[in-house]
Image 1 (cartoon, rainbow, N blue to C red):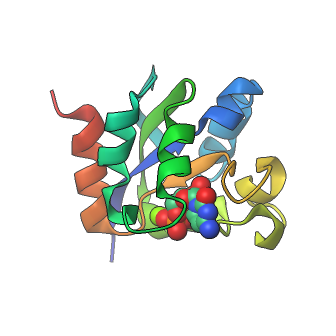
Image 2: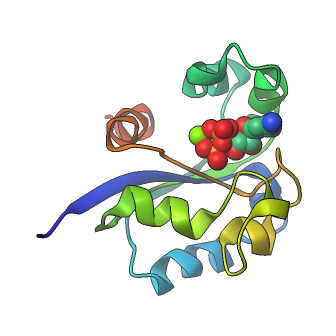
Length: 136
Ligand code: CDP
Ligand code: MG
């Protein structure tokens, strides 16, 4: 049965800064993702805090929010069959050192915090995150 989904993807500051955006977008396209919408923005710290609210009790929360708001990012709506899961697979594990060969984080990630991409982890969160950036 067909299950066309949308998910939110972010190319994080470490990757934008290293001019990897086009190469990373090509990774998505090669796997059959359609980029429905995209924009380059820079978040304020309080916006990053809101986006990463679910992590507010984690020890890395403050650094994570400082980092996400440290420079320009590219936010995208990706569409594909089973986009949420397929994007998580293509991204690889949170820690680039543990990510499988061929994944974006393995190829481009620097460290667990500077891991180049974000992707929604469920369909519910995908809807929330897409609204966060693209509700107008
Ligand atoms: O991004 P992902 O869903 O794979 O991981 P997460 O557990 O939802 O964590 C969100 C982000 O926090 C990660 O992508 C990392 O950038 C960062 N993080 C970190 O800096 N240190 C950790 N120990 C875990 C996550
Ligand atoms: Mg996550």
